[in-house]
Length: 236
Image (cartoon, rainbow, N blue to C red; front, side):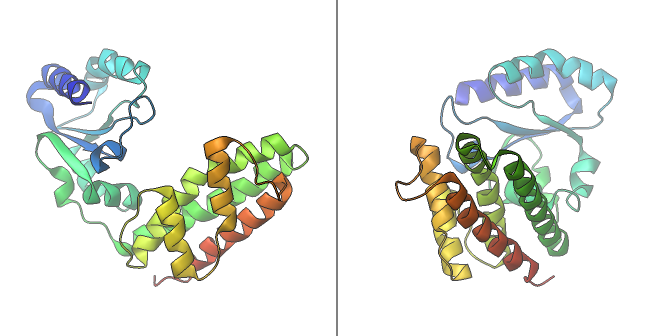
């Protein structure tokens, strides 16, 4: 991990020189939850400008980074980083909570995240994913294997959004899915058996012995609905 990050920093320093304001690691690697061959590196690259010149200079570096299994670093100017938190409050909130400056200025420390934008994005993302889940389920409800895969694929997103909902409620941030689900049960006062069951499906690929894909979907969807209502009722 350290070798890969050091190599990336040196490559970007050579490519951009004094135009490189900062490099910041965020996400699972910054939290300490990075797993080789499973996790990727999330890096914010802040430049004095982002033009076709910078995009061209970054092309071979970013291509190699992507082929190695990680998304290319995000390119932003310093001004963009300081003025985009109203559009990406969840992302900047996470960066502020857990980040590691690899090079240059700690730009993220200067960013202000407005709670009203933060709450609005959490609700917007939840409702959009809720609607998407219903749409996709309608296409595969009669195909148990496809429906089960849909649930398993959606769990990470709902756990991330559940974590942000808990933060808005004033709870301590949770990063592991099982911890997020357990805290949601405490705060919402309901069982999240559907979430736990889908978590089990992700682990061993099998449905609970006393359930079917449709029954699990119904339970899971009720819990998603409860999470959406919970966020809707949070202070604006």
